[in-house]
Amino acid sequence: MSTHDGETRDKESNDRATRDAATHNAATPVKPHAAVPGAARTRTRARANRRQWVAPAGLILLSLIPILAGAARLTELTGGAAATEDNARFLDSPVPVIMHIVSVTVFCLLGAFQFVPALRRRAGRWHRVAGRVLIPAGLLSALSGLWMVVFYPHPPGDGMALGVIRLVFGSAMAVCLVLGIRAIVRRDFIRHAEWMTRAYAIAVAAGTQALLLIPGAILFGAKDEPSRAVLMGAAWVLNLAVAEYLIHSRRHRRG
Figure 1 (cartoon, rainbow, N blue to C red):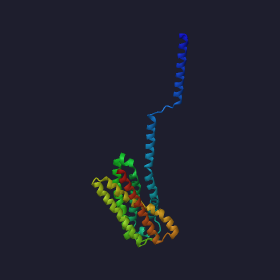
Figure 2: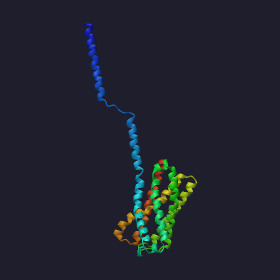
Figure 3: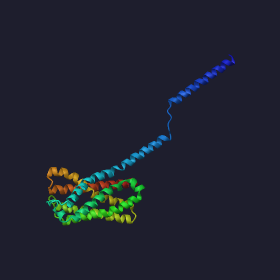
């Protein structure tokens, strides 16, 4: 065998090896090791950012029913509406109800944004400034509500039982706010958040009550005192139960 033949075979073997390697590399996809995890983290953060706005959006929607009803009442009070059985007490003494509508609207709408974690972490100053508005608004809402229960005549459908229930939960809201103030003065941020969550749950129960009273009015009539007392009380209890669930969930996550 000549030296030339051996060199030819070696060259052919090298060519085949090169072609096989090229074919293997073409068939194997190149994984962008750095780009894929980074893109995945970006998508995950985007989804988390969207999810944290679900709760405040739901709270605002829940608040819209009583807020719109309050806006209609303000229009009635400032538009020279004729006195009826339902609005005579407000026309005779409009200041407490106007204070209540304005303060509870501010408390419910602004308070919803306090449940956005990003705003608490990245905009701590905004959270503090909003809190300085929310606490007076909440106290004014609770105290004006208590005043109306005590001094306004009961409208049709609101009996003594509902009046007592309103006094209980209105007082509970005021107490929660005072305990929230005490906690923040002591720099106990966890307890402050818990008491403010309870106060907000009581305030936003007006939306839950509207949802429960619609089927109640269909089944029992819009002016039925026992059903109205039960359903409105149930709305407050339901909201507080949700608040306690959230509070205990946070405690569990903190360990």
